[in-house]
Image (spheres, helix red, strand yellow):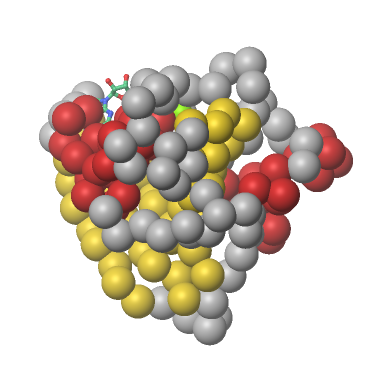
Length: 146
Ligand SMILES: Nc1ncnc2c1ncn2[C@@H]1O[C@H](COP(=O)(O)OP(=O)(O)OP(=O)(O)O)[C@@H](O)[C@H]1O
Ligand SMILES: [Mg+2]
């Protein structure tokens, strides 16, 4: 492990800003795994990443589709596993084809696919501290097994 950023945000704007800043250092084929309870700010962070990548479509929590694509210079594939719990369902939807596709993949509820994620990735942990406060920890995992 390397490159750990631990911070607290005090508004949605600050959480978006973190995603926006992270986007600047993302490259094609990067995978960003988001962990944390309901309402902890994952989708808010994705919005910032999308803005940081200059993607025009607003990013919404994918409520009907599990995978949303946002085309752009570097496309962003936003995958949300909230509605999928069974590993059979998760394996069925073919999301792994988006890894190594030249885009950036960002995954909500990454807890549910942790053993299928590439060992080189960026993990982002969200925790609700209060009404408007969130703890956000960003860890660049380098794949060498800590
Ligand atoms: N500092 C903060 N950062 C982000 N969101 C915040 C913050 N403070 C309050 N909020 C509120 O928390 C909620 C975060 O919603 P968001 O959809 O981003 O969560 P989520 O982690 O994607 O949840 P889900 O698991 O349901 O997809 C919003 O209602 C937002 O207004
Ligand atoms: Mg969400």
